[in-house]
Each structure stands twice: as structure tokens, then as C-alpha cells.
Figure 1 (cartoon, rainbow over the protein chains, first blue to last red):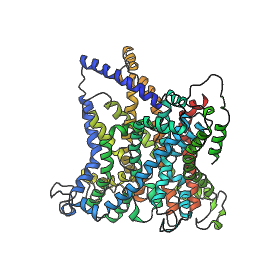
Figure 2 (spheres, rainbow over the protein chains, first blue to last red):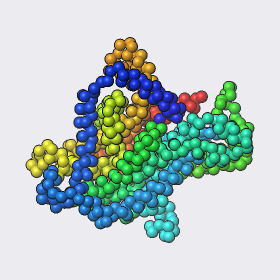
Figure 3 (cartoon, rainbow over the protein chains, first blue to last red):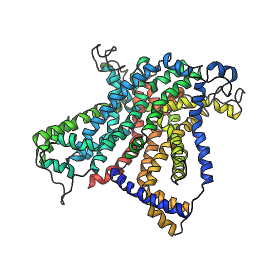
Figure 4 (cartoon, chains in turn purple, green):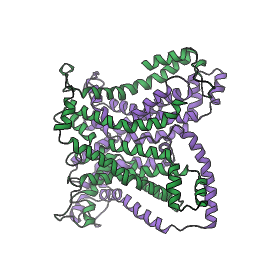
Length: 312
Length: 323
């Protein structure tokens, strides 16, 4: 959010304590019933769930059943055949693997490089740290389409041995997608991590300095371990961001077999044109990892978003 | 490259003392040993190089390409084009002005419909009612989906013959059935509702965090002064969330400029769904690969995007850089 996020988070914690006490007092005196609010929220929640629910419902029905009874019907069997078919024949197992190959290195690289940069701009006082931080933050806010053409040309004209890429250039490689995703996300992570590191007491590294610790030891042995909560939050968020990235693989990867699942489903839309049950199954399969991560790591996820909500 | 050399220059010399009054800041340059200078240079140089190569140089190249005529194949074929590409998109390129209109519509819709819905949900959920977490998870779930997937899921909902919406409206199978994504007079609205589904949840979460940070004594003071809940909210609580409000404004503008995935999975941004971002890509990967035109469109998108970006950066870093 702003550059003072981390301190504010701390005071917010204190205020939350106050708020709890405050609520307890209020609860004691009069407890409002909120029927109207609940009615409104239930209606909204149902509307919010309909698209996902419909996708799941469609995915669970075999296409012959919907052909026979119509999509808007309750008859017929429900099973996981569409999921099995999407997984085996639709190639989802392969696309998932591609997503893993792209997401894992991109997230690790992003976090590592951003932590280096954040340390340099927040824990060392030198001339250009604000300028650099502005450059990184601004980069993350650009629409990707602005740089699409030059990046495409760079990947196309960058010659590599055929052992590395069967196209002889960087197009059609996972590396191109990893590199661009990493570059794009470093800005966001640097911004969040530098706010976090700024909020850590200067005494921590002062003491180490007296003991003769160099910058690297301050970074690796003092600051990094203290940033674990921020890494957990950012890591969760970045996995979701990069898994959900649709655009860069669309631009760089021409061989359909190498697409990550988020981009591949666009191709399947054409392929499964007349089988909406199968497309729905594909959509549900694609959603599952993000929903699981969200439900398991909700706290980290929300912390990450609110730590640095500059993300567009 | 330049950064690493400046880093070592600043690091090697005595510490530059900026202004009077010693500032309590972590780490002081003057204490850096030669080895520390090397470490610092590497720490800064590697991410900066990556950022320059993959983000900022391409941005500059985009501007450069927009003044060229080139097929992207042989570097010898580049020809200067002056402002021809710009003249072409402004005068002779039919989808340009519709795309501008759609981008503006996208922004207005998110700002007037989606963002207030998110704010309303946040305010309601902040009241400590029963089941807050469940509601929160439901409204937030779409934010976990990529926009491409949002487009596909809503396709199932909007479909002409088999979609849920036409069944619910009772128009399925009749000539009145609306092809929500195919009909160019309605598809932008259909896409906007799908985008709202995701945007409102995001806004809700940010405002929920913002509301928790508002000092509760402010509300008490307002209550003592006899303000009703509307007055308390709009005169006291909402202004107190200024930092969150700024973030929301920036996110809303940037999201509407970045909008791409939804329209691309629907019909590649044609037939009523033209957006600047989609036009850029059509000119790059389409049949008539026109790099100059695509880059001119990208430059227009860049110039428009710089407005919210600069606004946000001055808000965020203005104080820091002055102190």
C-alpha cells in the first residue's frame, strides 16, 4: 500500500485488540439482529456462487445426459468421467506439469532477487535507493501489452543452440516465460519486502555491524530469517499470480504442448467446442489448485495482498 | 550496469551527509568495506539488469518501433515512418475509437458499479455479523481465478443455446435467446459483469483491511456528536481510509487498462469487444503482423497508463524522497 505499510500493520494489530474489547462492550449492551443485512448477503452470495456452481454442475454430468435432458435439467447420472477425460485425453496432466515447470522457478527467483534488491534499498543508505525503488514499482504497474512487441522480437532474435530450444531462439521455451514473469513480479515483491524490511529495527543490524558482520551476513543471517512471514505471504500470492498468468505463454509459446494450464484452456475451448461438459471439467480442474491454496493459506494470502496492494 | 558503477562510486567514497540533523537510518554507507561494496553492487545490479532488459528497454523499444515501418524479420528492412502509424490509427483504423470508448466504459463501469459493490460488501461484513468468514470466502473466490478462466466460466453461463442465463430468462431455444458473448450490442456488458464478479471481491478485501485499520475512537466520537451511521461512514470512516482509497482508485484504473484476458478468450477482442490491449496483440500476432501499428497502439496505452502510475508513485514516494 503506502511505504509505511508494515508499521501501520503493527498499529492495526493493536487497534484490533481495542476493537475486540469495544465489540464485547457493545455485545453486552445490545446485540443487533441484522436480518436485512443477512438477507442481502445471502442473495449476493448465491449470485456469486452461480457461475462456479454451474460450471461444477455441468462438469459432473456426462454429455449424453445433457443432450438427452438439456443442460438445464436435474435428471441423469453424475460422475467424474469428464474430469477423467479432460485429464487423460485433454492433456491436463501435461499442462499442469508445464505450469509447475514455469511457476516454481519463477516464484523462487522472484523472491530471491526481490529480497536482494529490497535489502539494498531499505537497509543500506545510499543515493539511488528511492529512484530504483520507484523504477521497480512502476515497472510492475505497466500493462504487459505495452512491452509485448519488443519482448517477442527479443525472444525471436535471441539465437540459442538447438540443444536448448528446438526453434533455435527463445520462443517456445519455458525460460522466456519464466524470465519475463520474474522480471515483472520483482517490482511488486521488492516494494512489499522493502516496506517490511524498513520496519525492522535498525538496531538489529547495528549490533551485527559492531561484531564485524558484512552486508551479506546481515542480509542472510539477520534480515532474511526475520522476513519469513513476508515470504510466506508473498510466496502464496506469487504462486497464484504466476499460475494464473495467461498472457506471456500466449505470446511466447507456439507449441500447444508446452502451454501452462491457464493458457491451454483457451485452446481447449476451441477443441471442445461442442462439449461444454468437458470444457466445464477443464475449467474446474484449472480452478482447483488456486482454490486449495487459498483455503489452506488464506491468512498468508490475505496478508500478502494487504501488505502491498499496489498489484493491479 | 550504470547502477552498479554508481553504487560502487557512492559506496567507496565518504558518506554523503544529506541535510542537517542525523537521521536514524539502518546501515551507513561510510561503514561499508570494499567487500561490502562489491556485495551491494551485485545485490543491486542483478535485479536491476533483469528489470531493465525485460521491462524498461522493451518499453522504450515499443516507443521506437511505433515510428518505424518494419516486418520484424530482418533488421536491414527497418524504415522510418515518422508519425504515419499514429496517423493511421487515429484516422484509418476502424477499431481504434471503439476500443477507446470500450476502455473508458470499462473504467467507468468498474468505478461506478464494481468498486461500490466491493465497498458495500466490506462495510456489511465489517459489522461482525455471523458467518462473516464464509461470506468473505465466497465473494473472494473469483479473485483466485485468472481472468481467462473467468471468461470461460461465464461462457458456460452466457451461452446462447446451453447457457444458464437464457434458461433462467425463459428465452432458451426461442428466437429471443440472446447470444450474450456473440452479440456485439450486449457482449461488452456481459464481459463487464464477469469482470465485476472478480473486481468487487478484490475491492472488498482491501476495504475490509482498511476498515480494520480505522481508529475505533473516531466512530465513538462521531456517535457522541450525534452522527447517524451514514454520516459516520461518509464523513468520518471513509475519509480516514484515504491510503486505501488511493490504492483502490489506482487499481481500478490500471485493471481497466490491463483488461485483456476476458475479451481475448471470448472472441480475441473483436466484434464489440475491442480494447486497446487486444488491438495491440491483434497487430502483433494477427495475419497482417503490423509491428509499427501495434507499437503505436502500445505507446498510446503506455501514455494513458502513466497517468495513474505517476499519481500513485508521487503519493507513495513523495514523502520519502523529500525527507
